[in-house]
Image 1 (cartoon, rainbow, N blue to C red):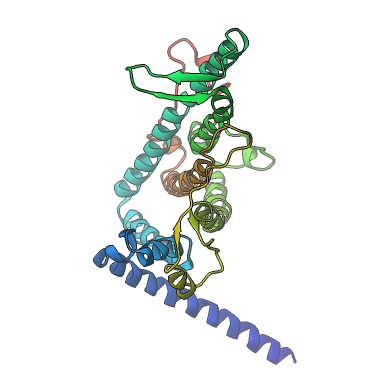
Image 2 (image 1 turned 30 degrees about the horizontal axis):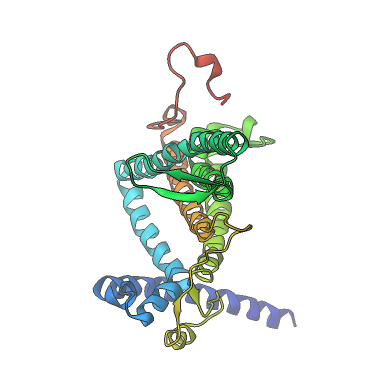
Length: 309
């Protein structure tokens, strides 16, 4: 019995490793197919192309394509360290730029809330027209009031990775704070590979289909096979979600689903940047901590307040 259990265990391990190798190899094939046949998934005038895009965007095939790309650029970075530092700086630049731009939505929220309260409470207006250059749009006060939720979501979804780069995220240091520099970098690498990336990948695969269920009909699912998707192509049509929580309220709730994917995409990019930075700082020692790190500052004379925001 023990020999049979041992044989079945090693057989399962072998089958798993074989499946991993095969899928990684197929990932390169899918990259070649996608590059050489862009119309098969980008020509949305063809409903089958649209459904292929929907299927592959949240499929295991896409996951292995992504893994193949990451493996290749990581191998280049392992052998040529300046390339990896360039990746770190580039990925963190994307995160910082998106976060710094999206943070202005916080100011917009404040100004819009003041406008809604002022015009509704004092002038008793039911509609508000925004036309700074003579051309604009008119929406109900309820629409402007509900749209504050979307602006808040902009700040949350697009500034999470930015806050991570800036060191403004909440962390509980039970062991981390007392260990050496290299031990910290090992913990960081482990966390990015085995916590950040797997959770982000899994969330992406379900959030992707959650978005498309509110954009097209008939509804699609993560469990749908490609053959079933292509059969649905004969009857598929756009059905963009425009419902609101109240009459004349904000009617762009599909935008929240898009923000979910933007949030997950930024987390994936930051997880990769965090792994590469931790690896490089592990190799180069404590003097490399924070190298090329672009963090916001309050300016000269405000050093005592740094990190408190």
